[in-house]
Length: 588
Ligand code: ARG
Image (cartoon, rainbow, N blue to C red):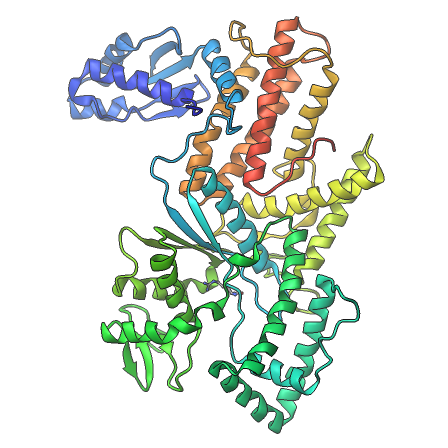
């Protein structure tokens, strides 16, 4: 077994044993253990226990202490305050524990797999065909990618679904226009870049829109095209496919810039559920979950009312027979639950769509597609704000193009890297600039909890001080440089050595990696991992300030042990950042 029992878990076990030795009925009681500044750990659980047993808490605590086995793991335990326990672990246990983590052959730092992993379908990175990507699409992609990594790390089977907007009445207009101007999507070169693809689509979209708004006859032809498209007319479908393919060239270029692997097979857009829509409506209507109202097929909810006080239904089928966003999402649930066999569905989507998902999920529950064993969850994210605290817009009031933002982040980051560069070639500066810039954007997004809004502030994002990815990347690169400079002295664990306070603090924190990842995965909360990593880098900085590794040269065993601590810190940083989708370059 590669998994390593954490010190927290061992201490917990020791306390549980002592508790049940003191009070047999307390065998299952929680000692309420947590890391503490005063000792390594503090346990507060005895207070509640004493209350229940009508005992004096300090006396009970003293009895428990007498039953705690000290030596290997626990060095010292004492009663404090009204009946808390302060616990110190041995230096040897810390070093041995880290040595076991470092020796994990799978490189997982001793992190266990979940006992009962399931199947999760995650819906994220879902831009819209023939449209620019914006910051909202960035958030979905970045958060979804990290949650996917976190879940896979725990052993979960994860199916990715990129629910792109590739269907709707606007395609009638686009297709009709392209049919009348057949060379608009012709490519000069055999290979188009993502930027070119998008600018072609954008030009075409604007031209089609203009004609649609000014020419009644074109409008009629465009509307007829929608009918042809829905009826599956082969020529119309082939034209539609051109728009999808051209858009994908663009999407893939943006995802590549984001250093994110998106697979074509996982792109199942709205159109992918077309042949389920009729059936979905039939099932909902037959079961009485949905009812006809003024010709439309609707689902009603208590307590969901519009500004006029009238109930707002979820419209599954419009009175003209057309299907919308809701019918597609309900069909997608059926596919994900019954075909993909998911136990959990996650939707990484803007909080502004929360009402839609609330109604869709409730409908699916009424239909029996979701239940206590198969759950859906909207991982709702907040709005990206400009420096002024208002939703992010250009000076002209338009939505900011995601690519422009990313390019600017890369430029800024390259300047920072160049400024600090000592032995980097021009080529390396370019490569690192991209890794630092994209890392900065991802980290800024992931380090606040998803449901909160955050300010897109590039100056802050690429700052070397503070809670930024650059700070973490520098900590990692610095350790690599220390390991290079150490020359012949190689990292080696020496459990027999006493540790300085800064070494203990760092070691105890490294030990918590596996638990932090498990918690972040279970709560779909990458920001918890980000906070952990930031603290890890800070603890490393204080350790390195206080405990010389190379100069002035400590005794050889101390130097080896400190190099070992540094190395296991670096590996933890690397693994943790990878779970956030962020690179850790060896040199910066
Ligand atoms: N394409 C949508 C948008 O840009 C997001 C799709 C979210 N996923 C879903 N299953 N509805 O807002």
